[in-house]
Length: 426
Ligand SMILES: *Cc1c(COP(=O)(O)O)cnc(C)c1O
Image 1 (tube, rainbow, N blue to C red):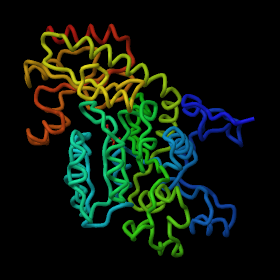
Image 2 (image 1 turned 120 degrees about the vertical axis):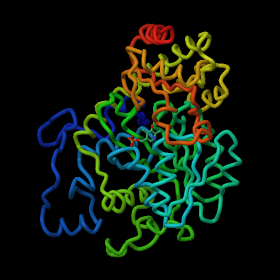
Image 3 (image 1 turned 135 degrees about the horizontal axis):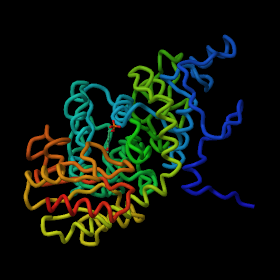
Image 4 (image 1 turned 120 degrees about the horizontal axis):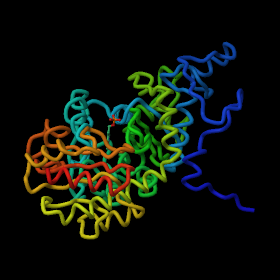
């Protein structure tokens, strides 16, 4: 008899979890504790020396967080994962394991506005130098490669425009150059796209968005695909060189295909400190149980709203990869056949002022800076999330002055359309 592999919805509910061995509790308990008692002195020493796996202190690991990590690793098809305090913490901890001062990484220009800021300013202060490239012309990634390049970073479905990235084409460039491909899979979620199947070596999430899905918890996840050989040429010394604080072990040699997840935990999370609260891990786990139902409904509602907006007389254009005429429709059909996500942009003929007007007059949509909530959300990026960028950077990031971004929620689509209708008339 061959063993059945569980499907995505089954993994969303069960991966990593089992009834609590002490109490029988069926839902994963919130282990709201800072620290864990050692069995004896030898046990303590082996935990600290990385000779045994176990709980020490919640900054480095926690049993509730461990269920979340195992679940997302299973959903993404990775070898291991690390939960951290936010999506930005996931990016910080990831690059900390890969880059030395003076190193470079290539990033897609079309990214979440906060990531553009993090890379342009705070990362540069660490000596980690971003080089921007254009996902609409993947040759720009190849041209941006130098001997100092240590990673390539893209979003699978990119914020704010909901554009779909040709992951395989960029993965081929990364593989040829011998650098890992990091994919921020926040907007797609593994229900729509599994970047590891298309060549990603590391997958990141702002779990704040669709994974948690209810707009109640900030969190981030790093997934190790287990695909990259970190030992080549000593280019990734955190992974390939002896660690003095761990009796000189080499992480890649000791932990093989989950060495990156271990490095992120026992170096990055340990020293930089952005640990996820177990309470947030519990809420994120609860959200993930309904991921497949929610994301499908998000996509179906988004498509209905985009179809309604397209012919509207006040609307200049709609960019939704789920619409047949869209520039990214073929990429969406290839990478995200179940739907093109719930986040997309459209342009108002009335420009900046019309954008401000619309966000001021909606009643059901919430005017705020988030995506991936059960509730429908609206924002005018040029006056908010992307306001710190120059007009040229705004346009390059898909956030020009006439652009409105929606994150379509789980309400009845008729109510969402009625709300936009009255606000566009107002
Ligand atoms: C929100 C977001 C982030 C940052 O995540 P936080 O949880 O807010 O730190 C990174 N990437 C994308 C695509 C996002 O939408």
